[in-house]
Length: 184
Image (cartoon, rainbow, N blue to C red; front, side, top):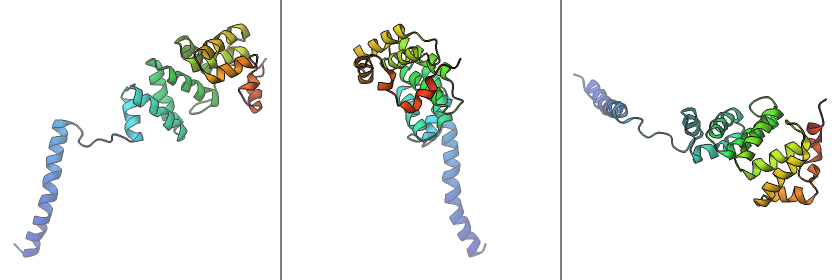
């Protein structure tokens, strides 16, 4: 055997040995050194049905980074598992056409679900939807009652709306008024 061939084998064998050993360990022990703190891992956890608090909270950063489709999938699973914060985020995504078409009816349904589960943000949003008749039939009295529940829970914006005499312009920009005009 030539010296070069021996040298090449000596260099190649150590590189092949650990790789084969790692494959065997990976098969026996699962994935070695998995991604833990990456968006891909969060999305993978969500795709595999994870709805723990950390995974669900990661949807916020996914949507803020512009990955609305992944955020929507994650928030949907978490909302269906009962996380009220995910319900209000689903409403926000539907109400702004992020990751899907603008859908005020779906947004109102998510807000209602969160409100009925006792979430103050859901109560406020549902109350405001009822006051405006946005995505749901207008019922100002019921809307004020939901806003009052949120205000009594300590939600500052609900307290502001109540103090204004339930004037929606107090808590939303005028630029959005086109959305809330009757569509009939």
